[in-house]
Image (tube, rainbow, N blue to C red; front, side):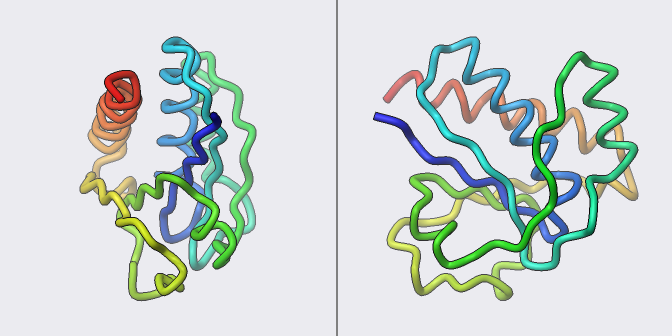
Length: 132
């Protein structure tokens, strides 16, 4: 059975893109049956160029674009991961299970640290699926 995973960050252009990309790679290695998406309450028009460049330099394909999170996204997701997203801006009344929150550095203040932190969290998150 496919598990729907939604990654959130405020602008759906940086942290959620990194998390979804790293999680997709870890899930593929582990043979997990997951559907992955990204969204945010205040989406940018395009992914952050430095995030795209970093991911592509690591051999990843960037396949998501920023978009606004909807009630349907939240209600259909089996797992929702918020990465610095303002939960006050989300329609949480449609969620029946808790949102997982990752605390990582801001990309604008510590880009490399944020990337490393998100990579480690995504790897750990994928490993937690293997144990279920």
